[in-house]
Image (cartoon, rainbow over all chains, first blue to last red; front, top):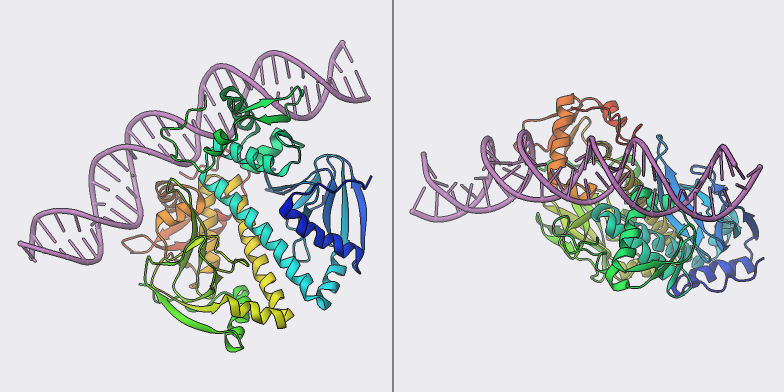
Length: 236
Length: 236
DNA sequence: CGATGACTTGAACGCCATCAATCGCTGTGG
DNA sequence: CCACAGCGATTGATGGCGTTCAAGTCATCG
């Protein structure tokens, strides 16, 4: 169903609206469904379309030759992905759960961009937003401990997922780990430690993907940390 | 000495030329010198200018509250930095050595962008190039060991610095470490290990910043690695 | 019901951070 | 000229965080 793409976060909805407008204008757009786990496009494949999530969740990643994976971003309803400003995708995109997307031919965007300067400006704005996210991610990967990375992840998701207070994670522990540059065991351990500390609580979900944040401040002060290794805040 | 930094690599010169052209057109531009170690602009300061390096080297970084630093990029002659597509800089920029820059008022760029669609397109191209670099950096920080990060750094610099074969690093070990998310001791140890292994050789420089790469292939196969921790290639 | 997959938890190892000592070069002042 | 402090870099010793290996639980599915 194409019903409810309403609840996009505030900032994103402006960009989303831009693409939404285009879908009513002279760029060709359509919809498509991808079932859980399927690939939407592959790294280095021709970038013929750009995508906006109507419902579901998507992860984008790069692979190393040894099979190691770095997830670049998680995309949620309202988010746009696949915009590479080039002829080829730089990431692989996969549906984390059953996902419905609106897709727009890149060629038609390019065409629109030729006549409409505001269109190029819009692409620039989206690319810049993308850049900001990646820059913050670098700070996370370069400077922070496992505990801080997981805390930052929870806070990021807390701000992005719709429902107030409860986080319903669509992705596995391994996905989170590959996003944060950790192992899934470490992610699991940090979640448990936060729960013991009283910062969060798991709902009655067999896979433990429903999380209630009880003490966001407790997590926040682990984000921009005060000390590096020594004198850690002692979570456990 | 910082004598010989003349020729910019091939790919960069196209973008550089774009800004160079603009400096002859109706955007106002000027030159300025910053001496070694001085700040060019600070994070969160108004982004009034964008910069192109004429001679010298610049590092851009973010700081955490505890003083920990993440260097986002090193900029060399021909490179453009400070282009944030927003009202405020997202990084601090400092001159690594005595540096001469061409600077262009952002406002005049914005003005030119209003009349010239190709201008916005050019900004988009530069921002996308920036994004690509940061995405690759994420892969480096998220997936790789210390040895692989240092190897990747050397290969990156080998491709960017002018003289064939010899790398004249303008930055300190600490700068490199903060770029790679390591400590300067670890960077130093990796350099030594590579030298012992015969992958590189230090020229007669007291600070050991002149490096000759003897076996680029040896370094390359450490880049996209085959194995994670176990069965390491045994550098030492 | 056996098989599989996601998750948790425990134990041991190792890479890298930390602490510390040393060296060489530079600049300053006696 | 030399003494001395300061900075950058190297190298060694030690310890801890996070990985690795492993076992076990629980839910889903053919």
